[in-house]
Length: 97
Image (cartoon, rainbow, N blue to C red; front, side, top):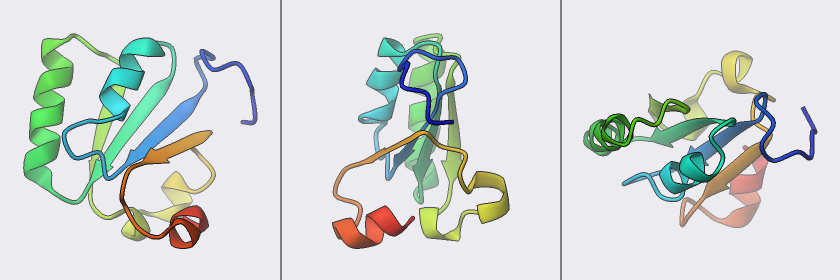
């Protein structure tokens, strides 16, 4: 969407390898109008993140269980304005996603 307004309601942000919800969960609190997709291959972590989001009444977070490189490109390709991640893979491979 290429909109530079970081609190635009149409802004979609993906957190790849979210683990315990960092940085996606804190960012979702700072940017309540943005939509966050927290992605991780470990379902147990996402269950915990979902419970934390529910406890904090955060309504702009959804989770995706799976590996980012296996995500359906038709559904997710070009959808995200910003992608964040920590220690996921080598930077050139990360940027290719």
